[in-house]
Length: 560
Ligand SMILES: O=P(O)(O)OC[C@H]1O[C@H](O)[C@H](O)[C@@H](O)[C@@H]1O
Image 1 (cartoon, rainbow, N blue to C red):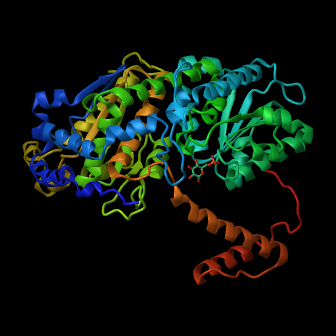
Image 2: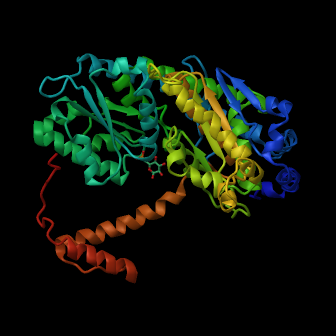
Image 3: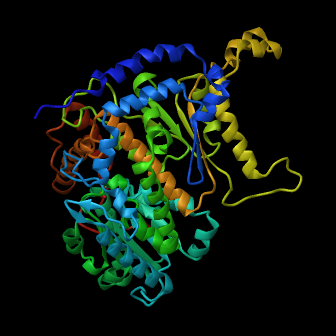
């Protein structure tokens, strides 16, 4: 099959390339002085306000980006996704995380079958199960209520749920429902993470949820076996069925592991791991902690953005605008990184989706794709790495602010409330980046000559600001979906497959070889063989220096 031409060969791409020179001549300071331009670069939807006026872009840039979207067939690609076509071609799968939050009476087809009833069957099962656990109808092996949950999972089976949990943890409505309960996440395979997770928990009152799409991920399965041992060592092996449940697409392996299939919560191949937080992956642990009704609001927020993404014209479409501007920053202005104050699962959603080297047809790309995403919430970044973004490299930034704090603090005698203090930075940083500070301004302030260059800020550094009315479950869903779809838009423009992740396989398979060697050396004293000089040397050193580990097959759990 003939492969499609690269987007970089199209006229709109070439036009944008030429346009870069015009834009580079114009400082953001000038662009910001045009109030009409700024007004046209603000979009509102469902209570949110996106301000992208601090992008190094004019209305003409936007027109050119819409032309690019046209030749990239962006609209058609979005429709193909919503229609359940197998757009993840290297895995021959459709990409239907939008179905996970579709209203009960809607229709989303995969291979001609409406998947919404299946989705709701699992959601109903989660609602029922979580209510039974929370109300103490489902109890542990010794008759105690299961008030604590450890969710074991990694990557997409961890980061999305962690993000939502982190955001809900301080939401007054959600916390009310979480009273007396704890939700912890065990992801990393480092044994100290096991220790941290079980510290202070009693197996008698703990429910373990093993979350893995494949149910083969080495870290998750070892952590699952470790906590199975923790439960059975304390309560006997028969307790496992009361204290362990699973979320997976691979129900056969769930059963083989020893978890009752009735206590397994399914999802489907058409849900990518990093797009799975709206499946049982997130909905089960979060419903156990906060109750299903809160989590349903999160799903509704995501669904609202899905419908917006599917139907709003590009000029008003938040994920489309954000995606196009990211492509502009990465591919044309040459800024490969992005800072966001919302980073947990977004780093995975973005970098695993779009860090690709070949087109969807498998042809090496003549341009780079993906961004290096990083960030810190609130003002933490200001006190660590903002030096670099103000005077070092140019890093386009996303600032996400909330009108109403989840937990307002007012102190008598203070100039502003604590939330206003936080938001002062939300408003100040984008302008500091855009305007900078000139040597003339510094001279007027009588700054000594030898410090002028040190204290100069070049400015002209782009950012977008997104203002949310509040941070309830619904808004968290909106935010998640905006970022998921933005990444899809970027990938659709770049002509890559944003839904596979072959790049994670090599490291995993090399770790398997090392694991085999460690076993052979520890158990049978075999020498290190088959590795390059460097690896063999350090591996041998590691084995020799840790020769005092137990030789016999035994179980030792953390002592915390
Ligand atoms: O959910 P699992 O099958 O355990 O997969 C967990 C994670 O492992 C892989 O390495 C993938 O890169 C991730 O996309 C995935 O989320």
